Image (cartoon, rainbow, N blue to C red; front, side, top):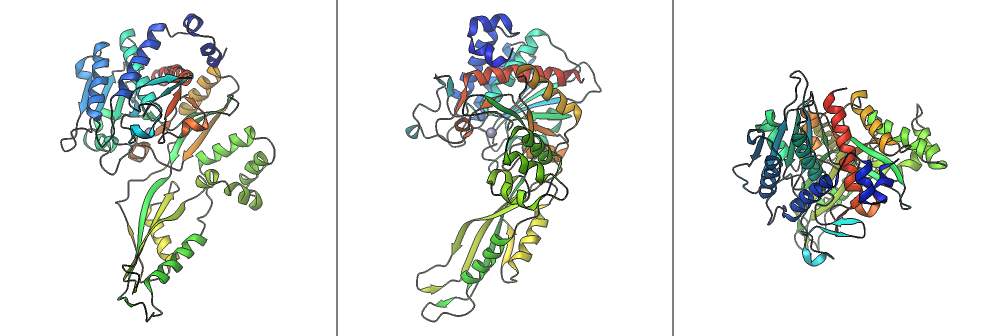
Amino acid sequence: MGVSFKFGIGLALAACIMSRSFADEASLRAIYKELVEINTTLSVGSCTRAAEAMGARLEAAGMPASDIRVVVPPEFPTQGNLVARLPGTASGEGALLLLAHIDVVEANPEDWERDPFTLIEEGGYFYGRGSADDKAMAAIFVDLMATYVQEGYRPPRTLKLALTCGEETAAHFNGVDYLVTNHRELIDAEFAINEGGLGRLEPDGTRGYNAVLAGEKVYQDFWLEITNPGGHSSRPQRDNAIYRLAAAIGRIEAYEFPIEFNATNRAFFESLAEIETGPLGDDMARILADPPDVDALARITANPSYNSILHTTCVVTMLDAGHARNALPQRAGANVNCRIFPGHTQEEIRQTLISLVADDGIAVSFVHPPETVGAPPPLTPEIVEPIRRVTEELWPGVPVVFSMLAGATDARFLTPRGIPTYGVSGIFADQATRNAHGLNERTRVQSLFEGREFLDRLIRIYARGD
Ligand SMILES: [Zn+2]
């Protein structure tokens, strides 16, 4: 029997047939409510308060205080992070890190239908800022760690929990980057599970697939700039900063970075080719041929989502040029936002842009220092099989789809530094729910509790190391 059915028939029966009890459900609700209702926006909120509250929950469950730490960066007192651990019995086993961020995107209460910092249950959904991104997973991890402590559960592998700040505003401060740089021992692990992998609920309510994130593209902004002596606009000259920049932008627009396959996007299209029926599924199979079918590739890359995981993309996102209506421009600049396919460096892409620009007068520079990059986390059987097994146990017949993110999560700070990080949650969401940074953020009530069940089973398998 699938969990979907169990939750659908109400709490009384659910309590009888699941390992979870009423008490468990109440405890997750309480943790989730407390976490959502602590404002953790950068502007007026405090991750430190949330980290302390969650640490107190673990201590109340019986976790020794010595295994709980709130790490507050001295220069950012509101950007605190919680780190906790449940020591394993096998000293040789690397730890499993449970990672979730507790900061949230800004939310203006006047724009919301409900107060964004009150957890409201309505029509089968929990509403509130962070109810999906990423306090659902954070609350589940706290609840599971508390449960393990209460049970006296001692698996071979050490379990570590990190609830971090600054995922949404990483340019200001990022907790994962800070911890891995300054307190590596607290979060060091053989691998980590993190946000980014949601199950897909179709419009008719059926489950499309359980998505797992294995790898991300690398974010990099470049600034193109050209200067010119300028002059009076009544006497135009051939050499014009805006025209030269515009011509360079045209060459960037016309360029397509080469299509690439790695283990992750190959696995993505292989599984989708089996799920999608009709011409789309056929096209997905054809692009995997060697060499790929060119016509099929043209149709697939016409979809921005599929296109984004097949190669590096660069797009001009901002322009800044000229200083007066009646003057020749002395300066023209453009921001080029690139999402780099794993395996390429930011400098390599800069060199490509320089050759595309093909104008010595236009400088191409990094807007921000490049992050450390590396290969995607490997899709080994030890990682993949437990995800497939638990998905099949809970939702028979629902496939697992491995994918790469065109955006970015905190995994980018861990995978390149030797802690392979996978996005997996077992939380199913529809299209509207996936709009996590927008108004009226929500998570399906059933999905929250299913996610707890999924992650509990998955963590216990990983923790055994079998
Ligand atoms: Zn997030």
